[in-house]
Figure 1: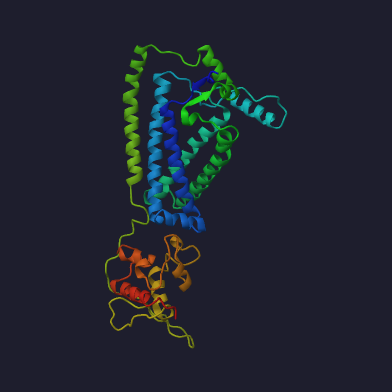
Figure 2: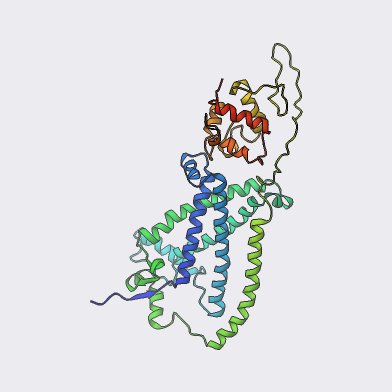
Length: 392
């Protein structure tokens, strides 16, 4: 019994493009969604597995650069096929796609006896391709705004940054849902399409999915051979033009990633300075006079021995601006003793008797935190944690 006829649908370069895009998209989706929903338990777990929130951000940005490089290659590959090889622009939408979509809808509801006959790319495939293109454009623009917020706000109002964050996250969620609901159904559930693995599609599937393309192949109309001399001349024209465009895009990607430091990194590390001036505010009796938190460099102030004895006030004075309120940075809040112990997305903030396992000590030990403790204050915190981090 002879094997069924197979037709080459995707050469190896097409398949490499697909898997690179799929890999970068998957990594972007995972690392992006855990940041968007950082308070959920599954996000906390995944962030911990990936090495903490800072590592997640690095992975996310590396995957974004890979996707941008894939865009540069894709533009060159499409341009070469259309200009040099004189391929058909079969991915462009047409009125036939509208008609095919309407007929498919009627077929799904039983109003048509058969599905529409379509060519090399069905209207479903075209819709998914252009949705990916549109999504990439949105993600690149909004990603640049968030990656380079200072440069962005030199030309645009500050409201652009939170708007870009909302658009970036919403588009990411929409893209993931589209892949799960649309792509998975049409490619893996309705009929498992192996062509992106092997490159080939059986004639039976071609007849059902792409009958017009199959008819063109049998009639010899799917490929129009070009004289070698014309291909050579067009290649000589295409190469320098694309070379300049590709170089410009690569420079743009480099600037995209290195134009400025992020908002977190642009805060200069504080120098080792004396105590800040904390004015006392006169209050009427019988309210007790306010007290200052312990200050570095003052040998007259004893070390706090518990959270209520002054350690909580120390954390509030140094960390409360970013790690207090309803939406503390990184999920870490020092508003209460229990919240400080629980920590955030990077792990437990305080681990009694284990200062080196406490995220707060780990981050402060680097010496470049925006709310940096002084050396004496950090020693106090280490001693307090070693003593079991008593609350009161």
